[in-house]
Image (cartoon, rainbow, N blue to C red; front, side):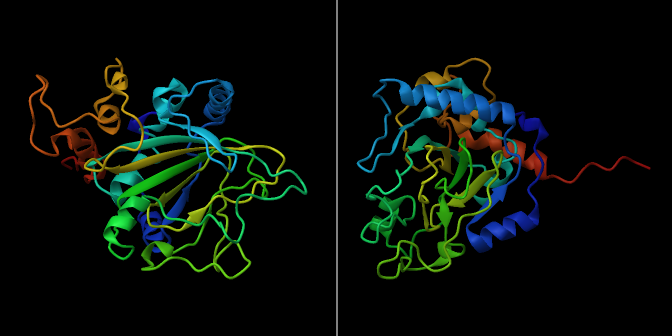
Length: 288
């Protein structure tokens, strides 16, 4: 994935995101990368690694900070299909807050459900701490997730569901009694090589996986550089050779001069800011 192939985002796509709180970008990864990423994810999940492990009582498994665990996931950091949309909707002053691998097991036929039940329907907004501290009506768009799905995307695979337009609601979604989904909820049409972008205020939930196979997903969360990271620090990534300045910014390069002294606030966003200005500037007209 070469950032030089990026193009300015389609204005209609940005309008759709503003209206719905999410969009699907087609052909964001190659079949070869997806196959390699699924294999890398399977290896990580089969390991006994505890650092960064993210398990829950409902059977989910996964890791946070996977860009530091396997180089297969590094190309997602500055995906040329995703990054222009993220910058247009937030600003160049962004970085990667989290890279999360999620393994959602399939519910066996006839087995009692412990997730997606009326008393625990699973609908939520991201960055819940911001909502608790600021109030649901005060939270603004602060982050955007890019969701990649590495397993078969059958209708019963449990792909992320959304309520379009719910990012502008000033209260929680209402799930009818004995139901698990609010009115208007649906599963977007996401293909195997696509990526779904959605913002922190959009109400969403993992679908029911009854496919007989685990659902594998990678969630890359971008946010403003003044927000705290979700993943554990991985300073060794910034010491890697071969990274571009943009990748270093997205991986958390602080506002510092080359000698380590403090630079002015926001100086660390210069790589993306320069790239964005070049990407969106009108083409130079040659004298006729």
